[in-house]
Image 1 (spheres, rainbow, N blue to C red):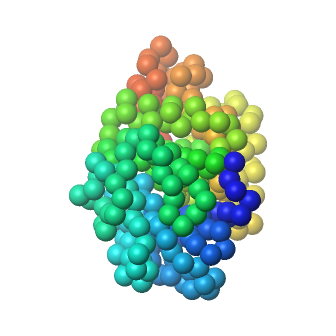
Image 2: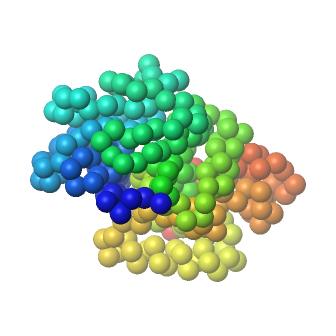
Amino acid sequence: MVSPLLEVTAIPAFDDNYIWVIHDGRNAVMVDPGDAAPVLAWLSERSLKLTAILLTHHHGDHTGGVMALVDAHPGVVVIGHAEDAHRLPALGTAVKDGDSLQVPGLDLTLEVLTTPGHTVGHICYFGSGLLFCGDTLFSAGCGRMFEGTPLQFQSSLARLAALPVETQVFAAHEYTLGNIAFAAALTPDEAPLSDALHAIRQRRAAGHITLPSTIGWERRHNPFLRCDESVIAQAVNKTGASAPDVFAAVRRAKDGFRAA
């Protein structure tokens, strides 16, 4: 599990992004800093040194702050997928699936997991009970399928679902309320989903963030992790279909969903 000396904190950015910070009180590592301004302010207020930036994929709301942070913190190491190197700014360390990454400046080792689907070059970072999953996995949902295929995306999610149930899931957006509303509407007879929707509504009404969740919670509540279950296949008229085909149907249904 994570060292008791390490903390993980969310820095809100834009309308619904979270830039995750891993720090030990001296050094800090940023995950997907789409905007430099809140990061620079946060570091300055705490007199922390930025030692590394972890990138999950190339989209601007995850990478837009990188160059300003590199300029402000000489020596910071930018880490990302080798196959996406041409689309990642200031990449200093290129990683690939299965690599064991000793995070610069911290007593933390993370495994690199390739998770194509949202983009073809998407990766996640997993270790010490922590999962930084960018836009592959959201709480009760997943990212839109911009570049990958249903087979790729469903396989990526199945890989994450196989992680230990206590794994904390640090997704990159505050989408939980809309996602759980969709899940509850998809299978309205499942009481745990209705209960979760009520609880998430209360958290958001009180101004609290809904992350991290856990892999165990996602297995129970996230329809995109349940595409091998008959209740999900039936809900999208795909009884007997393969899990990737069910995933594609659930993704289409979510794309067209508007919460009441």
